[in-house]
Image 1 (cartoon, helix red, strand yellow):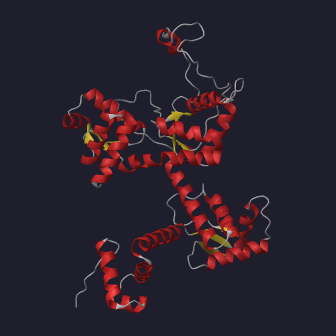
Image 2: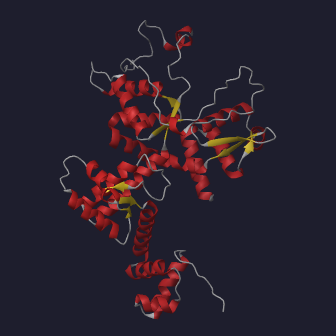
Image 3: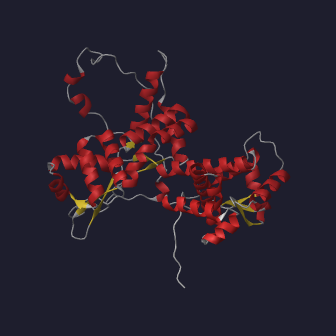
Length: 411
């Protein structure tokens, strides 16, 4: 990890969690996995403060732990996860775009708190929405619950791993740290909750209805609360699913720019049909038949089956190969070539950066080297049809800026 990335992680941790958490997090980023007492010794931080800082980092999935054979628990920072905090506003805005204000606040609460139960999220979001409504109007828990279920069904939120229940009444000595597990088919299973109620407005004063300050309330008013029906089932935002959505949007936009709006809508439909059945790192989507795609097109999108087949053929024959044909059953089986599409988008971005910094002729040379992989200087001059002196200067510019590398061959 570069020093700039470490500095950025430090600033993010300090802004979100304060100096102590930032000190512990950056120490783990620099040193790798370490046990608790070593962290406390090296950072010269009291043990109880280190424990609290690690709890915060684990709660937000910024640190993981592992029990070694010797029984020592070591903690390791997740640097990439810390850097993803920069994208929190984009995740929240995406949820707002897809699921309105309710979805926005659900995702925001999960990102701010790391892990929460569904009932706690629903009540908190209902209260926040009620405060923004006109006097006399409130947000029903059921409406917030329905939006939460939709987020889970589309995998934007997922369950957190839990400590497995022990069937034996005498489990023996407890391990140094719990081993958290989750069944893949249960990751998006929403518990059946009968949440009845409406959001409440926050009072303008610090006194409750009896006029007694909140700070002086008897403890039994909070200690005697019954546990929520989903107590122990925690949820978190599925950041990989948001990234998958961003990837799909970029592919749809690229198809629209290259071909037309109808082609992009067909690709959007194929991606929407595959968004849950295809993992975020899969090279291809699941094969979809032409008949399935036709039935899944948006309502009101009036194109015939014959026109759809013509568009699919054009997409499959396009040199960019965003869409591929994998069979002939069901009117033809088609897939989205995700890795190929991302590679093409990355290449286009690189070419635009080179053109902006060095001009169109450098972009032509850069594009040529990308296609041919390796070229000698004389070959660059001939293929790009650029005079030798200019080609040499352009190659040196891009070499000095690390846009190209030099490979010395041996006779």
